Image (cartoon, rainbow, N blue to C red; front, side):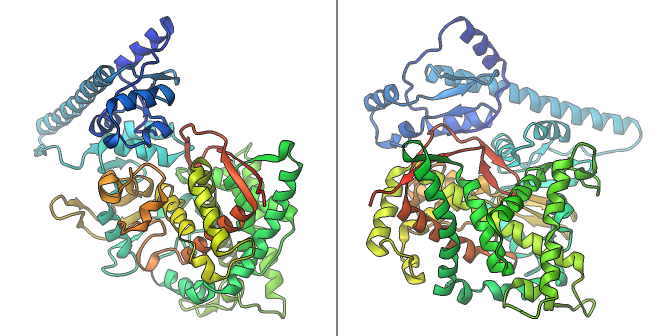
Length: 596
């Protein structure tokens, strides 16, 4: 388990030099207290604990047993500046690391205070009296260091924000020259206050244009996900009837989804049967993308594509999403695809914009199936009194396809990966399905009775929320956060909340609150009363497709567990990636046909 990231202190550099001269010690490590581990993370040290070893529960493990386990499993390790991992020899060594990092951090803080004082003196000397403010509880982070560090995490903004919050706390601010004042805050009450008052309630927050900048090169700035105010309400009213509870929680929907999923599972069965020794290694997220894109095409747009057409569209979306972070920090309104050498991204946009032909074919058809595409074609914009133009239709369709398949496929990928790494949970899932469903397609009632599947979905959403980043812009001056520790923000401030950090808060989701460590996968956490979480947002702007997404994940787990046995390729710590969603870097699992 990674506690934090980055190790810059001189002590670790010295450790690296020493490690080249002598073999790394392999002694067992007594359990460091959680407070010491957390402190090490806050100091910028990257630590790793063996998953099987640490899952035993230190509070109930005697030191003799702990040493025995440490000799069997991985001990505590630290990452050296060169990138390699070295076991920590003991608590004295860990304490020394923390002390060195603490001194370095203190020096940085003194330097920042000195810089403020110098600025104050310079302004005073220039005849501009300025009151030197005390350092606030919500730290102000240097935009230069923040920006330079962020550039090293271009393939994983979620990992960067995890590191930033570990270093600076749950709430900190940054003033960026091109983006203005940003408040990074992972507190649940701050998040809910902003989400509940976006296009609703006090209506003092709005969707930040920063969040949609990168995506706008494909889906424009006016669509269901990026619009606000009356324009958003109009589109929501157009699309929501197609995803209400009566439509989604029906045997007709389960039957339709099963038909689509089974088509892809049959192909997967054939590949497994043809694999050496009947065992196939797959990337679960990528494997699910084509199946869920097929669902979006058929359920939303009433269109069935061939495997080749689906594969081409899946590849185009994957390319566009891969470049999403870079497009998001692009300060211009000109896509990076216009630059020389960007043919792959340019071709991806061209492929996806081909939905124009699909839209036009429906417009010219006498058939009008009751789906979202028909709803969009027949909608009349109250602001203009006219139907949506071709560009707006394309943007709405692409937004539905992108959000409708990528986040759900990522949720499925995490669920399968976690089940592969926790075989006892997968066995429980199969046993429950065998007892309540057997081998056939479940009814909607039977699917709703699968408690293990529902818990796995919840725990996957908590640990790895696919849509992990919420950004809102304040429409007025206000205070946010709890009354005992509020943060005053000015109009125009952008709130950035990372759900990956928010939903791993040890005080809210840890052992004392739920019975299980916050950073570990334990579906049973949801057997009792649990804190509120927001993987789909909250309030009126919560995801209209959340019921369908949960249904798809539970159904796919059911059909997959009926067909395959799954095992982990590795138990090594997961390298976190993120773009539109939080995902793993090329993490795979092994599957075999289930023995009847």
